[in-house]
Length: 324
Length: 248
Image (cartoon, rainbow over all chains, first blue to last red):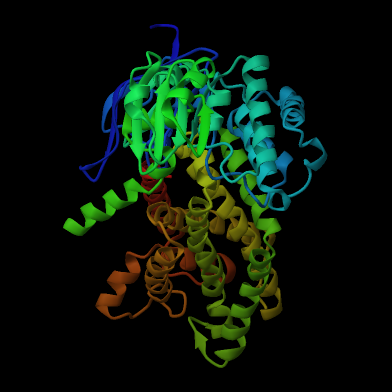
């Protein structure tokens, strides 16, 4: 496993001795990979990134980033990484250019290269025309892009993107995706991305770690994860479908019922749909779709991503504090 | 510690300070207000230690100005945490000591600017400057404000909210100022007050400034310098340690 750029072993973070924000997380990220953490808010994604970025010490377990231990060699780790936080952390009182200059000085870039690097970074995120405006005049998307420019300035091997499109409109989100793809293609950077948007993980990540309540529940490529759901999903709304008839079909794997709605998991639905409908009898509506990462999430956790967004972590914190 | 990193942090502090108009204005107006209140209000009818009272408290007013600025400078650290700015600095390869001294230098620079304004006003109340005494005063301000900025930053590093900072720093500031020799001479003090003033760094700052500007001094210059050196060593060591423990 020496080719992995990030490697964690049973990484655990416990707050107040009993809230397990991250539990026994063991992952290995290869060079040049876009690795996605997908999970609801409070699943432990940001806590993991903070540990990998040396902002939080793990409670137990270990993590190596670019070959350096996050606890024993924090400054080596910090030199190897760039990070784009969930909340933009650029200085509003400074211009875009000044923010980058500050970063260049902090990362001790050679004086002769500072200007050209800043130009290059601003160019990449298309902010060159606004370089001398104060950041407080930037839109949300522009701020996020400036963060990326700053994260890239010192050419880190690894870039952490914590919810890079949170709060962006659909167009802003797509622009951001384009940048991220360009980064791995042109700069061959390794990217660790957290998101609670399944489309984002699906379209960007080479591999996904589905994380829920601090634990990793599945790790694979988006395609394989979806394939493991076990076929396409046919949703039928009908009063009295002949379920027994459908069960006899070889392509049908699973039937779930909720009120008058039946979700049938089956292989190659496009080819077998005619057959299915013939047997089922009169239906009000039919919908056929390929599984999404949401279905993957349901399969592993028993509930949908949106459902899981109920702030479980906050509830747990509340419960434990109430007990005191 | 790396000097380029110290410069980077200082540079950012300076830009932020110059762009924040209210901060800039208060830096200029505050000293003038204090001089007016103490100078005109308390009158010049009493002689203390052989000089008139207005001149006597001039060193105290000067100290008061940058003492408050230096301590409250720590509040901006709390603010940096609040707006997520600090995270991006803490995640850079800069050591905590580098970040700390960069910030201290920023606070010291702002204090020097304010002190300069007060010193110029000193001309109008008849402070007999020589080039040497003027420069010496600035040097004292430099050392003293480094001590107080360190204290302010230490408090700031431990606080989560600006309100908490305000509370703790005010609690500290008033005894620091009033239980020094800023407003009264150190001769013939009651025993308890003598003990308290002796433990207060502000006492030595004021005494040294008064000696430099007016030739009126309670302790020896070497005694003052030595103690300020000790205070500076302690406060900056504590500050660096506090920065190492600081969470984003």
